[in-house]
Length: 447
Ligand SMILES: Cc1ncc(COP(=O)(O)O)c(C=O)c1O
Image 1 (tube, rainbow, N blue to C red):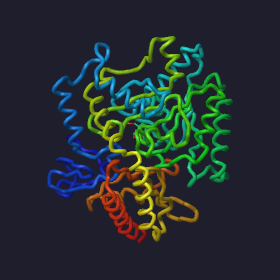
Image 2: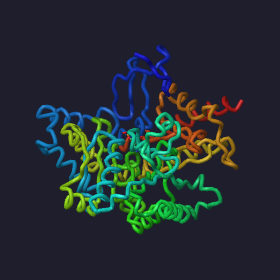
Image 3: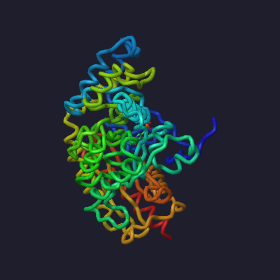
Image 4: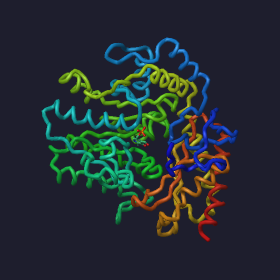
């Protein structure tokens, strides 16, 4: 089998990726017995860590009954229970959803539900999407089209869904000439201007990540931003899609990430932490006002796939979500997240090249810069975040590199996203080991 050179972790024996053997909690073991702390949960997936016995027992029990009841033939206890758990997490306006197998499908579903909604209302001219620069919404053609991740788009340019890209909302890197305090107003005006430029009757939806993940290196929106963008969307009849694939399902310490901002989106794709990685699972959740239109005019949403509502995947989601609720893990994420942030800030306070340490809950980004005064990034060719991630992995700590976050080419951020049930001692070990890798590698690269 051919191997790509995209790996961040190297097996010293083969020179390729290590072969995974098993996992338990925050630990993963390879076939040689090497132990890794999974400090980023892959790409922020493993909300309960690995090998959870209760989740595994629930999966076995479901398999003993049936793996998959096809959605046009059957509903199931697992599917209905997962719908209730998600609705309870999201609030009374979100009772309707389409289950899928991951984040890209969930975003694709969100784009299609937005289009179907406008068609059902007789506004078929609303076909255009607006998203943000430095955003990632997935790898299908629609989701990639609204994303602005230059190197992931390049091979497919010309065949992507057309989208406008407006400014991201990053207090560490505000738009030129804008103060952090003015970002919300600036961005809301920019969105309104773009909608008017295109013609409001042409715009279907604005899609954004409430806390940007891989494309920005964990960027929580500043206070007031989401409200201001919500107000513009409502004013022009444009739907708001909050992509919570990475930041949602509790990762930021509230079930919906946007709950923190006091804002309700019209459509919300979720995935990753929802099923905790036990079985591929995602969902496109949509607001009652959208659901009323879809059900009254068309009888329901016109999106979904063969494995929509897959029974075993729903059973995984139910087991994971029940544990998160029963054990009060969202409160744990809020308090533990503060601890992890503080620990990192203390350990790294004297490292000049650490420009910013930010995040919400168990979703934290550390950004490295060549010059902390000008915030100038390192040249991409230096490969700073890749080198740190590889050094950490060699020392048994897995974290997630987010390069190119500044301008699509340069930028070095590393993401930490541990399981929600990580203990204080484990959090401290993550912070210490991560800081050790940073302090070891940066001086070598600066030479
Ligand atoms: C915000 C966001 N949306 C969508 C996706 C796509 O999800 P998936 O890789 O599960 O298709 C990702 C994946 O990283 C993501 O971070």
